[in-house]
Image (cartoon, rainbow, N blue to C red; front, side, top):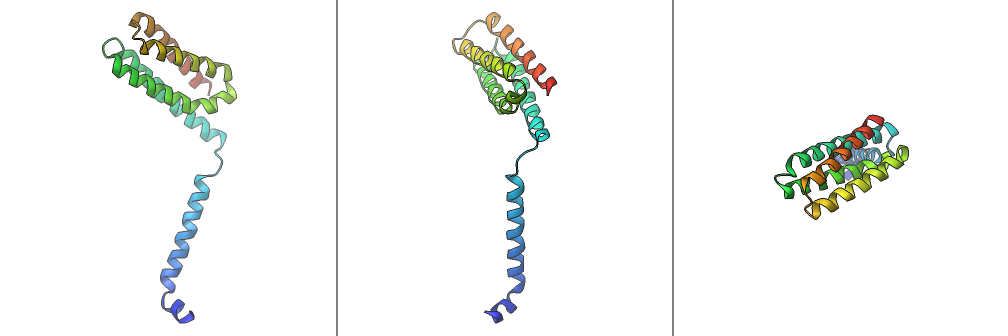
Length: 134
């Protein structure tokens, strides 16, 4: 064993260094996030939700199917941010979730743009207020 170790000490040492690096990286990845980090992630997700709502507002009158996809992406982004936001603004988060649901229901029933777009604008403004409060 000692003769083998003397002959192969470089690969053994490299393997041990790699294992320590992988374990350190894993520990870093699963560490608890700080409040600042989660606030930044929530802000990014809110920005994405607002961007997708903008796309929804532009496309719903002419391409409802494409608009529904944008609305779904906006909802997904908002849901990602909602966990952090619910800690500080639970009432606004619940209201926005309800507004998303109403908007999705109305677009699924192919409601007229005059009925859908004002709700989407109000939701977009609510998300902007949430982002400003973070």
